[in-house]
Length: 507
Image 1 (cartoon, one colour):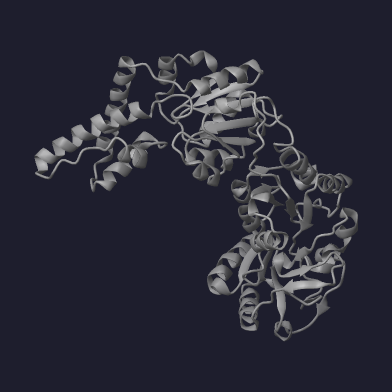
Image 2 (cartoon, helix red, strand yellow):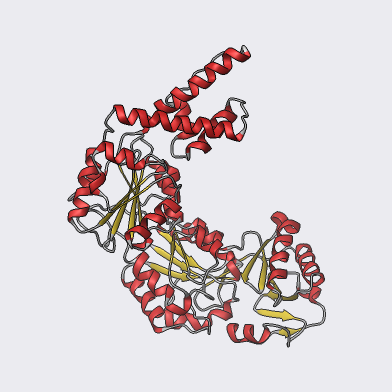
């Protein structure tokens, strides 16, 4: 499904640190328009504060000011909808912020009210919004229809504490979120950027999957999480970047334009290689269990041997009934896709068994020994379609890596006769660090690598690590689950991509 709309934050995203809208940013918006992709803005700014953006960007769609507190046409005066704070809630929030030592601004209608015109950040805000505030002694007199309150302090730790405390105090009555490290914005609970995405989807008749959003601050997280594709700026905090699908460059490094060119216009199906991958791909990472090899049955049998031996001994000594390990249910629920010791703890807990740490370690080591014995006795079976795809990728000059959370990854590859097919082989680490270590070994960036995974958890980890493309390999008939966790494409086997034009992207 292709993208139809991009919604962008303003400060920290569309403009530089010096509040400059660059020519390259304007050109990127024009390229979106030429490609049939709609574009609009959402900001904590008042409508008048976006006046300098409308003409250079040639905006035609409605804009969401005050983080969605007001929706206006591009003339910035025609109000389509607005959400104001209940007066009692506004008074509560203002009183708390003043008592906490923050300066407070009130936005009501087209006006900006404050008490101290020479206070911290007032001059900068005047420059940003393009008009002067109204100075009043008592803010309580302008809270009957307040659209946004802003708590301001140069003490960023104090602002963060106030954000957390306001969220607790206001509950569902209002939304409190930092729009910069120095500001905490208080708005109507539905005046948040997540609702901006949903409102745009409703008005334009678009599914959320066809909408992308880009931003840099904590108050952008709702829209990054709601949109089908969330892009974080390079100047965003690690928290914001962690929740985004992609991370672009900073706002002082033309990050918006880079995101448009790389993640929006550069997304398949606009361009594909013969292998069905984005053209910037330099490497492919293949999960071992379930993608390359059919090793789940070996793991399950080793766990069954171990657990049945222990459970049988325990039943004899305690007089309790022996309930054997279920090869399918217990393995998939507690062990598949997890570190072995983590799975063992979960299984024992489900059986109501608590053991000393050294005993759990000993059981885990014994399972490892049982798996080694099975590997010596049997050849690991492969998925031949995946093997053919790996060979084709190498023939195209792509680097390849085999990755596994199991400590037996190298042994399994050797048993399957696949060692020579990979430039890097990594195991005994959980995703996403497993994937990141593989990219370091191959000398590529995550934006240049594609991950093939068969588990929802593996897919989600690859997406969280901002890989360029994530392909879900559906061995168990769960394509919707793989897509829900972030797969850009789901195939029954990678061989389905060989020599074919693939027209489905996650958008």
